[in-house]
Image 1 (cartoon, rainbow, N blue to C red):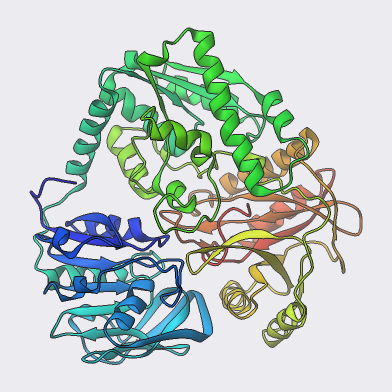
Image 2: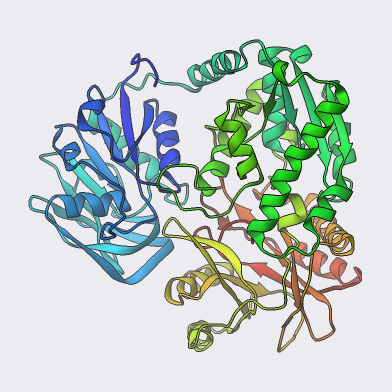
Length: 601
């Protein structure tokens, strides 16, 4: 816990995907924020200036709902409940919570119906970001409704006298455009001095690295992505190059020419302490025949550790003198159920059991583990890394291993009525639709889903498609993702057995390389945050595998909106794809996060 040199706002963590993001946003507004377990004793919060109750994956009516002492609401300091925290506040103080008649995942329009210090200087109509199934159905005594949406009568509530407020939406995410103003208003209600800054946090990180290493040197796994590159530079800067050794592992799951390019630009930046190990045969052998996303992620994570240990032995490194480093950032932790009440969305390769055992023994250091992607990029800029390194599109640690989807030939039945429901919703907007016989990972209400995507056909009207995607995923429980067909005219798609093979990986490398080249030529590469390209084990009527384009806008990966690419860019991609043997119909993912994760696995 930080020495109390600054005013502090406490965040009680109920397992929400955005609990740490709340603290991040408060810090960005100049006030230090600490995260505490949900069952923290009220006396432990003495000295804080305010409290925020986070979201969470449970229902407040569940028997296993996270423990909480309602006396926290009677400490006399301002309290802000968000999503689950909003519902918990209502229930604890005498209101009622029940399943809503409509689920809300993604964008919504809020109307402010009562003036409040929490909404000071905001326009009456606001875009907000929702992710909930339950709703407050009756207010606690002393509260009044502050804002509503068409599908949620109590979108915001407040008791101004006691300075207690609840918001059903998430002000901490970037897709609530004026969320920072709302949080800033809450800080004003708390009476906090805005004396915290990023430089203080970076200095604290450096001191923590020196203390954790305690004379040991760091052996860092460097994929070449933004996170590991910044971590490598930061460790070199804090500990000195003699005390840091980088290892890039070619796992056979990299993009076209990726390993060669990584080593090249690392050398350009003066990193002479980086080695490369070709372990592609080991990874592909271990992954042979595997189809389940979680199995693949676990195997990839364990193989990284096994190869790292092998290289340490080859170099004759004394284990007692070295500590393993990783470029883990906070979304990896929270999506892997890394906090007490969080739901596992997907296991990141740097959070498999073998890694967690090493962390438990104090044998791994992760200098960026409390940061989000936008903060990592800020740190990289302060360290002097060039723009093209810092602003590379994020690439998952498991690489193309989670972008080549695998199958045993069956994804389970599509729920009765889901096809008709999707058709009906699509027709209302002038589109046709089908539910695809495959599944992908999603995140809804802070919980993991594994459900079918819907495929719609019709014009590229992006705002209309965003609204259609939201309606389908909100109303059809068996669908967590929607894609638009860009090319092809198949009336039926066939799911086939398919595994991680060099041939399928090479096929994806070609289409992925084509997409990247087109984005650079069109000057749209820097306009989007990330562009996964996904190979599906779905065959069109010509027996070719279908591909999904997944361009997104985001800042910290906890939420995302699908990006709108130009028609010229899409035409160039479609034309180029026709020249790649085995590439069939192209789809364009039009799902926001939530309900769909950025990656399909």
